[in-house]
Image 1 (tube, rainbow, N blue to C red):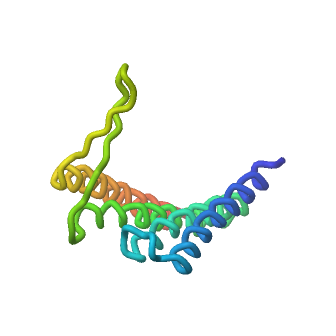
Image 2 (cartoon, helix red, strand yellow):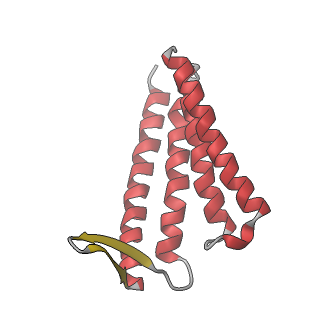
Length: 140
């Protein structure tokens, strides 16, 4: 299989995963523990990542430069909601010990701080992705 075809297949699979998650939210929203927009943002990351792979494989340079920034934005949204959204947060940590698996919960504050740090890191990555796309747009 050629690299372009591999990218197309991988992209199509990523799009299918994102579409499945979005459809699950649309048709069965009752089991969600997050607002719909958070789940759609996560699903959108898969769709946009798939489109990025397809754009790269088909030589669509403009899309291949800008879509990664949108993927990052979609990934930052859930972390920002966990860090800043209303209501309590519960993070579960699994620790493996010699006697088996031990579970422990962190406080709401620790959970928010961890995801807040991830959101800040994601925003920095987003700024770098936008800067790189702009730099490439300005190059002849």
